[in-house]
Image (cartoon, rainbow, N blue to C red):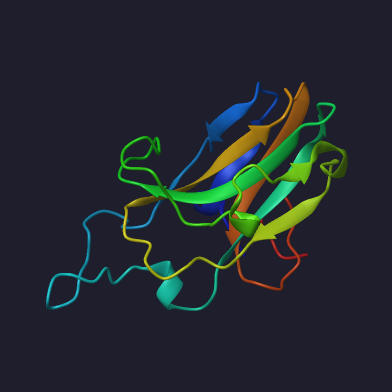
Length: 160
């Protein structure tokens, strides 16, 4: 079961011009002070080291935008706003950052998952970057949250 602390986007409006947009929420992975091993160099709170955790993205309002495509990346940063030392954790499919999901596919209720969190989440904050390519989107909203793999979830983040 998820809660508001595991939300990365909450009905976030993505009707935008071509560009990259950060999630409206981020998750504090350290929950205060950074914890390390006795040697002081390995983050103990690296979520990629435990049971798999995925990011679920659900369209809450259908996207509109002719030939637009949307690519969602998992990112980490040093600050809550995701602007300081931003690093992508999810490589682009086929090595191309311009390949995304066609807007025609992004209808209300459509849900997809970003692969499990990788080992090496070393920055304090976790979030998403929504990349809009080819054309402006004139409508479209998403919610996103952390979830255990394989389980079906709802936009509220609870198991269905």
